[in-house]
Image (cartoon, rainbow, N blue to C red; front, side, top):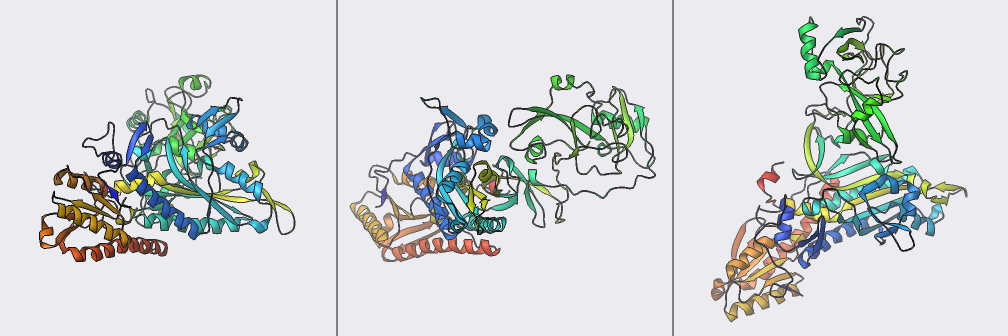
Length: 628
């Protein structure tokens, strides 16, 4: 049945919603797709549900293509499985929790690994049952501290999460690759530019993971890419480690007075003024900065850690937390407080250093502080540094790594800089921003072990199942599509994702125009084309045109004055093309155009998998966004 503007539950808005920062938030609200219910929580209106259903249909189709079967879990879940996996504590305040009348703990699920695992444990017991892939499209909840940007960062959102279950790692590798292909196909069919990048598993754990990023300046995620095709989340970038240096002829370390030099800038200035080099000036890159951090582990334990890195680098705390070096699970890291430093008087603020030799050093394997000392990977044996002498107003010069000090390990904690070499040798890195729209994980056996998911193998021996997890943000994808397809003031959906295939406007008051619009609607629907008909009687053509532009269905048929000559106007907002057609021809032309759009989406998916560029529909995004 055709949608009719005269009865459709929609009210377009002239004004942007309060606090709207991005195009998708502004336009989805103004065009009547969503309405805000609470911060980060939205009500879906009929037009929004139409588009959402088309996105979900594509996702379901690609899941079916790789043999994944759909299930559906509740959003309200008991806490016990999450306590068994350790994530009840790890999530902390990021989840919504509640207690029932019998004092049992529950949560609104942020993700469903545990209950998927328990479901398979309940039903399957033999290797003959595997491999298995199951998924759901379900509402999730996370207590975002700062929900923003409409659907891009909400507290309630819809995700597709799939899980694979295999008897061994080889099976997991095959399942992971099949799902990776499914994601490439799905995003291509959705007309959404997507870049798979290397990532870190974080609290999910596992041996490997990739994020799927929609490159956009409205995104909160920073990633890197190189001219040669390397792409990674900043947390997953590994430094190019230089070769160790022979320090046989290096001068002995020596302590020098450097009063009033608590910062790298003041230290470099003093070093050049009072202790000049013969070959060149000292720079911040010659200094070893030692940053004291406080790490909070999932069990609440607070640990003080010192991170050493070149002085021309800043610490990226999110990067440090995501590496997994600081501990198992989701750790929190922050700069140490004054109270932390007072508890460790050996750490002299502004003058912290490892010490003069491995035998007497304050930090590191032989240190007396009991603190972990972790170094940037670039600080290799033989490199020479200026660093603190653990005395006010004093620094050590020519302190040689490997000879004079050692560490407890390395950590990728330095902020990635533009121009850093890509770890695969594909050129200098550049920074970009984007929105994470999907992530796939090789979970391995973490959840299966925690929840005792085992099956009998070919020899009758109980074997722990290995798992994969594959998430795709459905509502976030819809927001990204709206970001990609608009002209600044109005949405312009890809043809195959619009809430209807055609928007017909009866632009006149005559009975003949209304009758022609009704007849054309019936004929198009009979041909399998869905229609939104603006049949409002007391609304001017100007308002109808404004609503049509805002709603964003790309194929528009205007029935107006030209009807006297047997013609109507056919508009394609994606291409900007307008043409006058005889009423008798407009049906075939419209049907052909709609079918071609659906076929183009399928071809784009095939091309994405083959690695060839696909001919995409014209994109009319805001120039400020399209330029990224």
